[in-house]
Length: 234
Figure 1 (cartoon, rainbow, N blue to C red):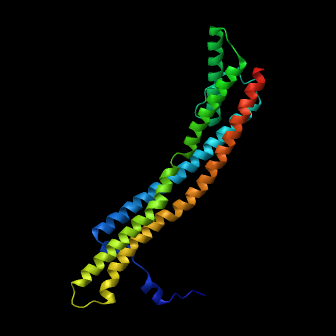
Figure 2: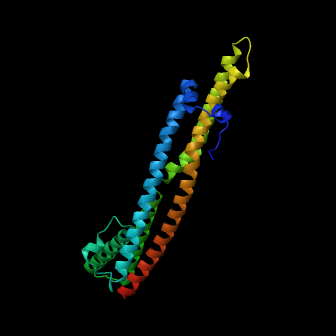
């Protein structure tokens, strides 16, 4: 049995393009800018999600390979110089600092294990901070879109309503029919702002959860790495 849709449904359907065309130039500019922001926000969210997923897979694979090695102080070059992998970057900095401190100690005749370990731990902490910033990159962009898009939409709405009332004020008589098009056009900017902000806030929170989890995993790996270097150095 076919579903009968009341004619009023079609009568009440909003022609968004028509409303956009009736919007003043300022409102059209804001809507167009928000449309660009929406595309940019989706690109950032999808790109960041793909980046975090790839880095986590590389980290787990590298950690598995590193666990198969009996000694990490004399690793082959193919495991030491993988700077694209966060875990490998920490290891590379730690080993470079360790052996640099050892070489300087031998030259000065004061090669102490405690000095080598301290240099390695300091290098791990620096690499940890650098990789944490790498994890958090692009997140400030999403946070800005979440905060700024609704305010841009609200600004467009207030401006549009002000323009609508200004146009009505010069008329001898005003009615809802003359005021409604301007108000609906103004409200379109608020809708545009929400279209940007709502997906962005969900995407931001999801990505932020992934970033915090990966930073915790990175900190645990850094602690284990420092312990392993200390045990092998003795």
